[in-house]
Image (cartoon, rainbow, N blue to C red; front, side, top):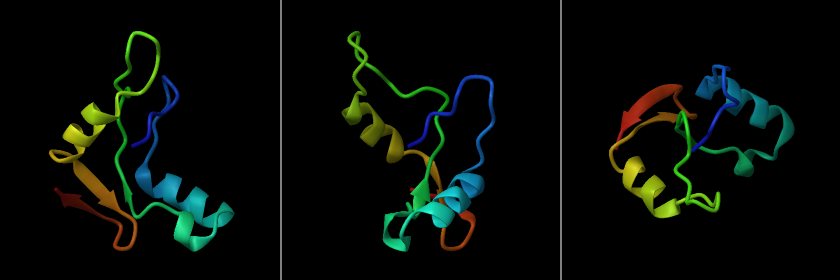
Length: 71
């Protein structure tokens, strides 16, 4: 899951390419999903259980084939 800076557009392929240039191959995520905003608690912590629930219904971008995958 990725949350872009407000007012900017973020394409999963661009993010993967950025990671491929700077990280070892095993650290580059295979699946990427961009969310407008990550769900947070009133104290600002990310609500991971809501992200897991959203991923089960999300359309994920897959790095290996540069295509979308439905979960």
